[in-house]
Every structure is written in C-alpha cells, then in structure tokens.
Image (tube, rainbow, N blue to C red):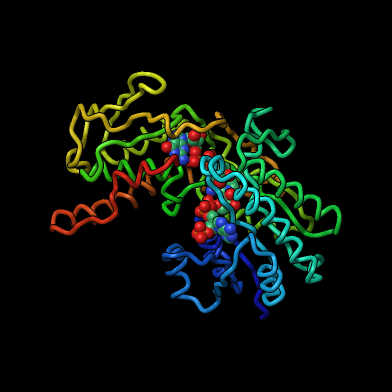
Amino acid sequence: MIKKIALITGITGQDGSYLAELLLEKGYEVHGLIRRASSFNTERVDTICNSNDDIHLHYGDLTDSSNLIRLVKEIQPDEIYNLGAMSHVAVSFESPEYAADVDAMGTIRLLEAIRINGLEKTTRFYQASTSELYGEVQEIPQRETTPFHPRSPYAVAKMYAYWITVNYRESYGMYACNGILFNHESPRRGETFVTRKITRSIANISQGLESCLELGNMDALRDWGHAKDYVRMQWMMLQQDVADDFVIATGKQISVREFVRMSAKEAGIELAFNGEGVEETATVTAVDEKKAPGVKVGDVIVRVNPKFFRPAEVETLLGDPSKAKEILGWVPEITVEEMCSEMVAADIDKAKQHALLKANGFDVAISLENKSSFGKA
Ligand code: NDP
Ligand code: GDR
C-alpha cells in the first residue's frame, strides 16, 4: 500500500508532536520542518523519531522561501499542516515584525511553494488559524461567521494567513482550509503559556521548590480544550470532499483564576483569593500535607505582577463548535478538568524528581523561581 505523505511545519511544538504521532498511527510517512538552534529543540519528537522509521526531520524556516520550495519539491507531500509560528501573543508585542514575517509571510511562502511546484491541485493545506482573530469579540459565542477584530501583532499576522488561505482556495481551486482553534493545552504545552505556567509552578510550590506564582490578568476567560482532541480535528479537516473552515472549541469557558484554583486543588492545596487588580493574591486555606509537603496554611502562593499585563488584552473567548460537530462528527473527548489533572500530575512527577535531586545535594540547574517569571511571558 502506498503511504500518504505529510509535511508538518512546527513539528517540534505542542501540536506538531501530537499530530506526528497521530499521522504515524494512521500509516503516513511524516516529514517535519525543524529550526537550527544553539541547543536541542526536538525534545517533544525525540521519542517518536527513535521508535519510528517513517518520520523524517528537515532543517528549514518559514522565513526562508527557497528552502520551503526545495523541500516541497523533494517531499511531494499529499498534505501540508502549517503549524509553525511565533505563537506567543505577549511576545508578539515585543517582536511584531518577526511575528508578521513568520506567521503571515511564512504562510504565503508555503502556499507559493506548493504552486511553484505545480502541486496546487494535489497537495492539501491546513492553516493553524486561531480564536485570537476574534480578539475584541463581536458575538458570543464565536462561530465561523463572527467578524474578526484582532488585538495583537500575532493575531493581525494570523489574520493575513487566514485570508490568504481562503484566497488561494478561491483563486486556484486549492484544497486549503483554516482550523480556527481555541486555546488547547496538554503536558507538552510550552512553559510560558498560562495553563502550563500555572501547573508547573503549583507543582513546584507543592514540593517546596518555588514559593510564589506571579501572573497577569486572572480575569481573562478562555475556552480550553486538549491538544490531542484538536490535532485529530486537524487531520479530519483534510479528509473531506470539499475544503472548508471550522471553529474548534469546547463551548465552555473558565477564567485564569479558576484554572489556578483547579490546579492547586489537584495538588492538594485549597486557596482563597483576596484583593483586587494588582493587589490580588491567593492564600492557602487548607493543605494535604502528604501531597504538598512544601506548603502550609497561610502561605501566599499567587500574586499579580503587572509586568504580565498585555498592551491590549483579549478578555473573553468562547467558541461554538456546532459546524465541526454537524459536518465532521467531531466532539472533544477530554474535559478541562481532566486536562488540568493530567497536566498537574505530569508536572508533579517532574517536581518530585527535582526535589529528590536537590535533597541529595545535586544543584538543580533550572532556576525554577526565575524561569517561571522570566521576561514578560
Ligand atoms: P508551539 O509554540 O508549541 O509551536 C510552534 C512551532 O513553530 C515550534 O515547532 C517552533 O519551532 C515553530 N516555529 C517557530 N518559528 C518558526 C519559524 N520561523 N520557522 C519554522 N518553524 C517555526 O505552538 P502550538 O503547537 O501550541 O501551536 C501550533 C500552531 O497553532 C501555531 O501556529 C499556533 O499559532 C496555532 N494555534 C495554537 C493554539 C493553541 O492553543 N495551542 C490555538 C490556535 C492556534 P521551535 O520548537 O524551534 O521553536
Ligand atoms: P493566549 O494564551 O494569549 O490565549 O494565546 P496564554 O496562555 O498566553 O494567555 C491566556 C490568557 O491568560 C492571561 N494571563 C497570562 N498569560 C501568560 N502567558 N502568562 C501570564 O503570566 C498570564 N497571566 C494571565 C493572558 O493575558 C491571556 O488573557 C494562546 C496561544 O497558543 C496562541 O498561539 C493561540 O493562537 C491562542 O492561545 C488561541
């Protein structure tokens, strides 16, 4: 049987690693674009690569068109998943031009690579679009027809990518589609996105490795799903007769504060939130000492630090995934509570290993406290 061939940009990221696993399970030959870095950056796919001959990594970059043209020519992919991006909203305010280059121009470079190689009628294209397009929301919940109002350089760049994908579908008859994905997380989520920052810090605090978690806007509301559910949907979108765009969400939202409370509870810590705005803190009101030996009642373990506020905030996002359910039969299987529990458990395992090393006199080189509040992310 001839294997289908897929090319994934962003294979070293959260979604790329889950998608690579899914496609390999489905019998694909998987190719991934990786960036040269001064330190190892393939941690999320190393195990997959070590146990499978059908995955191949290629050096490249979304800012390098000749590289993309050559790779598409060599690989001749049946499907391209464009997941590569400068994906951090807060960082995009610091590096707006770079975000535009990678997230907007990178998408057109890849679409052109398909066209230049004469593959526009054969290669199917998935664009990682985002709920950040809705930004200052015009309708609740947000669906495919809700107008966009992006609120960051990241979101504005992704808006170009969204429309150029639609444009190439309309202009050249390409099978090109947008998944408008709401926030999705997992134990593989990057440490500077808020859910992972929270689960990692709570785990470290519970084991006495860190004293306080610093956050920005805890009122922000998000519709959080699990990355595994969402990459399944990315594949499903490329298997239809007709290319189309879909909102992928759970249809439920909670605040950052609620995610903190949920994570702490998973780690055996009950919290009371006091004060408002930049004065807000969370104090421990009860603790399961076996689960969280590093914490005692009365400890203040969460504070607001204004350095994590953004120049323009997206206050609330709530998706309506009805179209995906009706047309594709997709429904998310993992709840936010189950996801939080999995993330906290994974981070507690890591924290326990670090605590053990520390107790035995080894220098835990990853300065946990500093790392969690580094920069503005
Ligand atoms: P990650 O930040 O985990 O991964 C981003 C990937 O893009 C990494 O592999 C990164 O490589 C790669 N990348 C960054 N810059 C470049 C570049 N110049 N050239 C090539 N590759 C590059 O993101 P996620 O996995 O969470 O998200 C995947 C995609 O989905 C992104 O496009 C994101 O914007 C979008 N999205 C994500 C959502 C979410 O909630 N997770 C929701 C909606 C959309 P490296 O490892 O070397 O840094
Ligand atoms: P987001 O995710 O901006 O929605 O983009 P992030 O987890 O960074 O922020 C979610 C909300 O939490 C608030 N927040 C903080 N965020 C971070 N990172 N750090 C903090 O300390 C902090 N405190 C509060 C934020 O202000 C925000 O309101 C993610 C990315 O994956 C994008 O690539 C993707 O397109 C969208 O999700 C959908």
